[in-house]
Image (cartoon, rainbow, N blue to C red; front, side, top):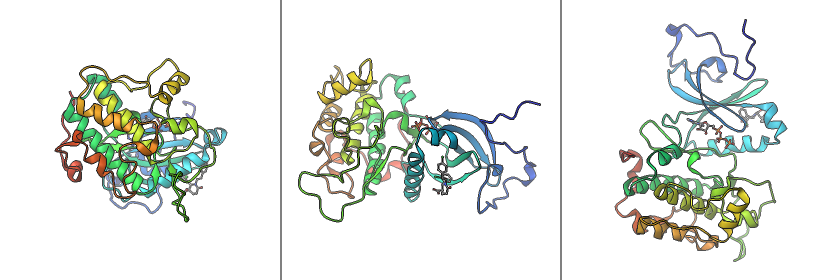
Length: 324
Ligand SMILES: Nc1ncnc2c1ncn2[C@@H]1O[C@H](COP(=O)(O)OP(=O)(O)OP(=O)(O)O)[C@@H](O)[C@H]1O
Ligand SMILES: O=C(O)[C@@H]1CCC(=O)N(CCc2ccc(Cl)cc2)[C@H]1c1ccccc1Cl
């Protein structure tokens, strides 16, 4: 008998299909309510499986995290933060991976998520080399919609990058990976004029080198504007095919970021260049959108000529432009 593969969850014997799709979903789910399929991804704390809910027949991505590993890496807070933020996003009608339910067994935590059938945005950028202007406008606009919603709730993503922009079966954006987020506790007393965010204790490094804003690198203080920097990096990457700050190692990338050392290649759309240059600004308060009133979206970014003709309110009902 094959040794019980401890890494995979105990998969129940295939249930009698006649009993499936009963549409009587249980009050509290357990692994037995799913038929686990292929592995669709490996994260730092767990494995993501494609799984089918035997009651509804619905496909889900189930992120299975190993408790021992989380404890060893001292990342319990990261996991509980991810769950907290995913619950806060339950009301969003668009732009985010949804959390349907969670459960646990003695060794693992399970997150039942919406299945982003078309995976990550990054391979699409790499496959075509760079997006045409219609694709860049559409996908930038969908990401902006997500940031407006997230920032409206006082949540900073802090690790926005193409790998964390997933795509559903209709190729619409589903932002994911909320373990690095920071939830702003809006201060009771108004901050003094040179403070734009609640001071946070110096916690460990978060985020991926290439998309980190200078203020996270220097004083470790993230604000909504830190996500606007990453947004600028992603727009640049959609047009140029590579992120703006590139080097052999993280330290050299950090140097380039802090010196704003990046080039705009020939042929880069002038409109996109203008928008990227207004987002990749060292002073977080001077980035386009940083002065917009919190909780009311980013009118100054929506108004940029780059987004000319984009109807932001109906994006999720539009058919995404083909990527070729
Ligand atoms: N809801 C989902 N639908 C489809 N694929 C997913 C989904 N969630 C995650 N994945 C895939 O599984 C991979 C691992 O996801 P996970 O969030 O666990 O790890 P990660 O975010 O890459 O790692 P880390 O937690 O260190 O950021 C992702 O790279 C992604 O491609
Ligand atoms: O936050 C919650 O909703 C519950 C509360 C009850 C509970 O025990 N957990 C698990 C807490 C936890 C977190 C990390 C490790 Cl390594 C072990 C247990 C939480 C939990 C359960 C299932 C999936 C994720 C989480 Cl955070």
